[in-house]
Image (cartoon, rainbow, N blue to C red; front, side, top):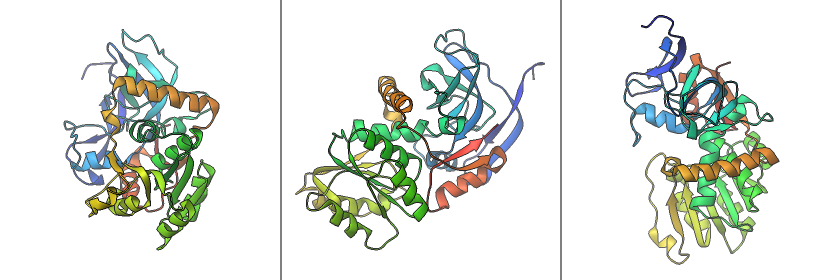
Length: 330
């Protein structure tokens, strides 16, 4: 190794598998930014369910091994490549993707995937913006094309994407309904934009939603667990209603006839199908939300790098999400 090369701690994955394949190493070379790249000293990194699917090897996108997981970091610019003009050393930033991986003390990112973090948000909140808010914004505004005055049900509203969807939908003038599985989760959903909340552990909660919305049904459903809820969703929709599938963990049987009389739609959403131009558009709207104050991430459980395997275990198997899971590197 070259003399004078700075070293850092980072999580490395050498083979696909369970949480135990996440290895903490302390002799990783700190990357050097080139061209349009920036190097960020990471203070916090968001943990997202998709990172567990990628780690297990079951996801459509497989990184080359070995790799460091993590896309949503928040921290301070440490160095910039020769062609970077938008950022300088010392700037507070957050990202929507990284080149070298976010579960590390330093992360390399392309300048177009880096955004200024306003002073009013701390680094934990900065690490909670990326995938959750950009996905929720794409689902609501781009995929569902919501209009003010419509109703939206956020099915699984107490996690990172769910709370982001509630805040965005409320800011854009929708009637917001949410579901959560615990009393604490329900309270958080109500505090973050929902007009009404339902407990999806209650056997008759679908009937309660139907009673609340009446004959018309719900215009848009943002669905976090389609393999459990999709059939019910189709019955809840209004004429011309649409289910936006943000998350699914397996197959489900549905009756396509349920879509016919209502002329309803099932639409999948994948954040990384967004173009650079769409990312810029989403970022402009979300930056406004930060400035005005309706975008305020709720932080849930926090883990050190040493406890990352536990974080991956819990994000999938712990029921009753409440806020966004974060790795702390400070």
